[in-house]
Image (cartoon, rainbow over all chains, first blue to last red; front, side, top):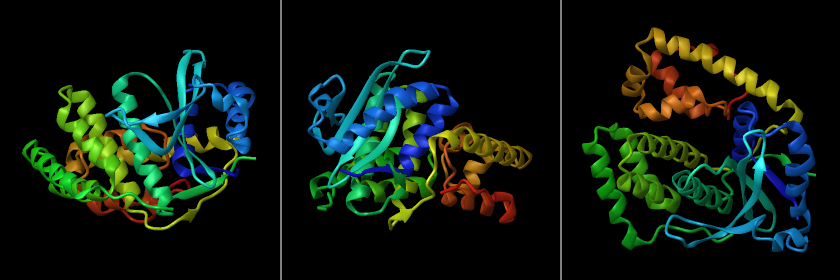
Amino acid sequence: MDIIITAWALDSYLELKHNRVFSDEEYKKTIRPDALRLDNYPDDPKFKNNKFWSIATDQDGNNIEDGYKMKWHQIGNGKVQLRLTVGIFAEAFLCEAYVKNDPKTEKRKMARFKVYLEKIRRNEYTENGRLA
Amino acid sequence: MKTHAVTSDKNIEPIEIGHKMHMAGLPNEFVASAVRTAFEFEGVHDLMRLWSEESDEKEKNEILADIQDMIDECSQKEKIEGTYIRFDDLNEIAKHIRSFKDQLRLIVSKNGGIKALATLTGIPQPSLSRFFSSNTMPRRVTLLKIARALKLSQIQIATEWSR
């Protein structure tokens, strides 16, 4: 499956990197290789681990169609929980990476994710490359 | 791909929340755009509901900034092939963006500050604050609104890293 880097993902990386949420080494040794597993979605066994991969849910607890979250625990010096929202269609779309701080942030991020998914369905998004 | 529209029975709620936003003193242009976008995008409807149910002022402001972000996103009506950027170049790009936004922020300060800019552009203050404090690529639509409001030239809002 091709892995598309959207402008939303790029923007969120810019913000997280500037704020030093994760190191270059963590990106290269953990985050990037994990994102590359989407190339073998859903066969890679890590997608069966719900501490790493789960269906996204909205503020009412409903599943978000086509929406998933990739999860890392204890990332960076601040040992934060990092999330990457991913839209799964014929291709995998990396949408937005963020630090899971509290339930309120999570609800806002999920609402934003719904918009991103709809923009992908409508073919109204910006592609900034493919992860390979 | 099958697109998702907000169902008709949900259509009344954004109007009601839009009225609350208007009563809270939010710019008319913003409220109208939020309601219009919420009709089409369930995610924006969700954000409006979060704003309506939230009591903490700081969190309400974050939600407003998110709504404005999504209004701007939804103004894009086609797929764009953006520039391919390597991870190793992100630091350099972030520095350029920071420097550009800091310079623009100085111009805004000389013209009455963020509050005055919010009035002139119709963009809520929390959204402008996020725009200047974040290191994300500025959207051209926001830059154009700022330029029009402050009568800036194209050169003053020109940056390689906008989208």
